[in-house]
Amino acid sequence: MAEGGTARNHAVAHVLEEIADLLELQDEQPFRVRAYRAAAEQVRGLAVDIAELDAAGQLDAIPGVGKALAAKIHEYLTTGQLGYLERLRAQVPAEAVALLRVPGIGPARARQLLKRGITSLAALRAAAERGELRGIPGFGAALEQQVLAALATPEERPARLLLGAVLPLAEALAAELAQHRAVRAVSPVGSLRRWRATVGDVTLLVATAEPDAVIAALPNLPGVERVRAEDAWQVLEHAAGVPVRVVLVEPDAWGTALLFWTGARAHVEQLAARAVARGWRLTPAGLVDEQGRRRAGADEAAVYAALGLDWVPPELREGAGEVEAAAAHALPALVTVADIRGELHAHTDWSDGADTLEQMVEAARARGDAYLVITDHSPTPAVAGGLSAERLREQHRAIAALNAKLAPFRVLHGAEVSILPDGRLDYPDDVLAMLDVVIVSVHNQFRQSREAMTARICRALAHPMVDVLGHATGRLLGRRDGYAVDLEAVIATAAAHGVAIEVNGQPDRLDIEDVWVRRAIAQGVLVACTTDAHSRRNFDYRRYAVAQARRGWAEARHVLNARDLDGLLAWRAARRAARQQG
Image (cartoon, rainbow, N blue to C red; front, side, top):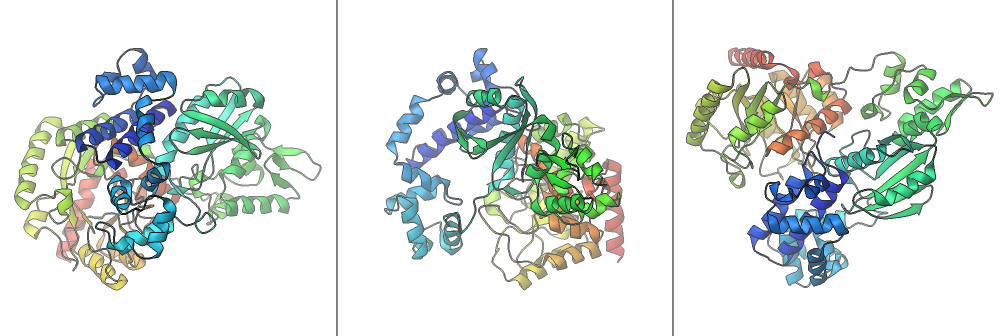
């Protein structure tokens, strides 16, 4: 599993985060809240099953987990319950706790709501509908509309889950199931397998000739609190708070069932139409000819081949020309995580990162990267602890000292420079000139008009020292829509000036969207698959950036940091020279 950990680790991390939320909701001392959140992050990122550490008496060896916290984790692992958490739950009404789960609220804002007598989701929605939230400090009209959207009924707005929040859990459960003797194959399906930025549900498809044996094993999976039958599948209620559907199919139907359950509907309908044109039927149980014989079913690639198609990577299965390309043997050779040679966007504790410069560098080297670009913030986003020009020069010297010791690995000095409201940059040209890579991003005044925001970004892209546009729409999935901007104009400007556009791998960003990746590369714009890492663990977000690029039909040749160090530096030197001459 790329992000480490197991289903049990995710369950323990969820428990620790719930404790942190309840403590903060009760206005506990901040250091106690931070301790539980930090421990949750460490547990979720463990590369081994936490039960193994417990059995060896090594829980307190986990960074941030002392003896008292280790005792609580041990209690949960051995009994499936935690008395301390139950006592905290009893102190706060369930309806009040539900306020925490509304996107954009969180414990601090939830406390404000409770002080004003807003103690339930119904009361919160009513207050938002009356326009009363915008008057509460820290809320505002935009958050009020976000609350209304989040509290819409299922008929009004289907729930969506962040890919990065649920995929690791689905993978961990799939890995656990794969070890069962009766399981022939298992895979996440639906939007998860297509790596969409948000998903409607979490579903695991399981091939087995012994369904009863698998069903009997489900309650014993780590973190599963209850199993219930629903329609033709089983639903696991997991401690992580995410229901997981488990669909069981016969091994002989694995390929077609995998195809149907992966979707998207438009893609499957096009395949079904090709089957009909041959006098066949494509069903979840198999591809059946006019005599009722199964032409294919057990193997997904064989189903595509029987229909005269190359196998289509799941990320492309959206009914957007991929079937025609598969018929013409013209599918792209999609970029892979293995193609990425280095990280272009990373923060340290010099600004708003959690880890030191040295820790970030060592983590990048350990991953096998050839280079790491440090891009701490410029001064304008004050909340991010941006670097003054003097501090940036000090960091430049620190990076030079590291490079003297680390060859052939290379630490490049960059910055994430704020685009000011009028399109100017947050550092003067003499400061920008000393940087190896300049990423520019919008960090404030998101409510400018579409015309003003577009002009703002395009002016920045025309600056001769700008290399990459960061998180181009500014969206935060589930929390904030992207600002109004003409991305067609932005892409055209990037193409004209040779600027790359970031595909940001932060799970709540995944910015830009896949459709814009495809349009960018069609105009000759390079994309940069970055993690926007704010800690060593965030380097694991690379796979989300790459998946988003793959959904946009990107090949390695379209990705800036699929180039080796010499290739990256040559690109930078050539384009800066050309732009300065122009």
